[in-house]
Structure formats: structure tokens, C-alpha cells
Amino acid sequence: MEARRHISLKESIRSIPDYPKPGIVFRDITTLLSDPRSFRRAVDALVHPYAGGGIKQVAGIEARGFILGGAIAHQLSCGFVPIRKRGKLPHKTVSMAYALEYGTDEIEIHVDAVGPGDRVLLVDDLIATGGTATAAINLLRKIGAEVVAACFVIDLPEIGGAQRLRDMGVDVRTLMEFEGH
Ligand code: AMP
Image (cartoon, rainbow, N blue to C red; front, side):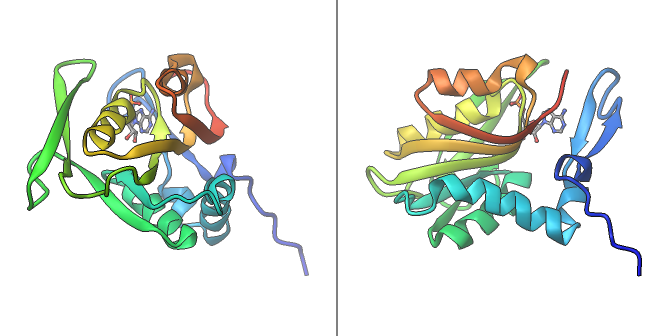
């Protein structure tokens, strides 16, 4: 019987040129998520540095950060907190605007999502400029969290987002890098 070739984690990412607009290569993690081995490997690798690290809550950024963050929270036996686009959370929220290439966007968190001093791990699929993650860290800090670290499957290091987060005193872990935007 022919041995089945296992793809690498990086090969499990689908790259789609010129999406959502010309010049952007969209790094699509749906192909990683639908491959059982890749999904487990990615979650295990993201969890590993923080196992036993006293993380109380995992905060995931809508929407792909929810999929990864839920699995990571389950494995760390801690809670999960959603950070959502404006207007989606039902209870009292705090919000933070952040700059996009054109205009601004806003994310929100429930004001009581974490307890004072809770150690939080922030999760998203990809870090580019770090604008989204910076806003998420500021939100979490505003409601009293200690943001211990932020983790992502993909880093686009040329854009400098990961370094931006490190400059804010947040430990950053990523599983792979791609060139460009
Ligand atoms: P940024 O705020 O610039 O770090 O952008 C990060 C957010 O935008 C994440 O939630 C990503 O899912 C998404 N994103 C940015 N660039 C890409 C890309 N090239 N491929 C896929 N998602 C991206």
C-alpha cells in the first residue's frame, strides 16, 4: 500500500492572489482547519508554550480567532472571551477604534469579560500590521486583563505587526511566516 504523504503545516495554507483586492495575497486557513492533522498540529503548537502558564482566559478576535481560540481554550482548560466587530455583543461593552488602510474599524469586548489581573492569551489567525491585535490588547488592558501573550498561525514579518506587539510588552508566538502583504 502506498504511504500517504502528510503535508506540512505551511502547505496546508491556501494562498489566493489579489483577494480581497489587487496586490494582496490572502492566506486562507480554511484548508488548514479542514485537514484534521494540520488543525491538531496547529492548535497543539499554539498551546504548547502556555501549558501550565496560569492563563485564565483566551481572547479570540472575530472570526477566525474564535475557531482557533476555542480549541486552544479547551486544551488549556481556561475560559474563552470573544472580541467582536462593533454592535454584535449584547451586554455592556467597551470599544476601540483602529486604523485600516482606508478609514477605521472598531472592535468591542464585554466590560466584565475578564476579572481584575486575569492572565489572558490573545489569539488570531494572522498578524499583518498588528492594528487589530493592538486594539484588542488595549481593550483587554482597559478592562483589567494582564495580556501575557498573543499567538497567531501566520506572521507577515515584513509588515512589522509582531514587533509592534512585542514593543507593547506582549510575548508573540507565530507558527510560520510568509513574505509580503
Ligand atoms: P492587521 O490588523 O493588519 O494585523 O490584520 C490582521 C487581521 O486581518 C487578521 O484578523 C487577519 O485575519 C486579516 N488579514 C490581514 N491580512 C491578511 C492576509 N494577507 N490574509 C488573510 N487575512 C489577513
